[in-house]
Amino acid sequence: MLLPIAFAFGMILGWQRATRRGGDRLDKWQYGIAHGIAFTLLALALTILARRVGLI
Image (cartoon, rainbow, N blue to C red):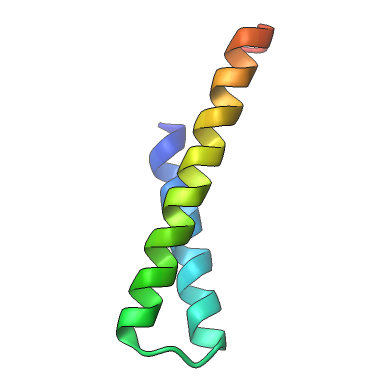
């Protein structure tokens, strides 16, 4: 459940970042998807690390 939330959060942040920089519709999608993937990978790495350490 954490990974889709991380993707959505990254998507929103990327979309806002492209909007602030004056990007068009495709720029917003590209920034949103790129940020979404990055946040998902970060959340996955942190989840794996937490499981190995025994926090979860």
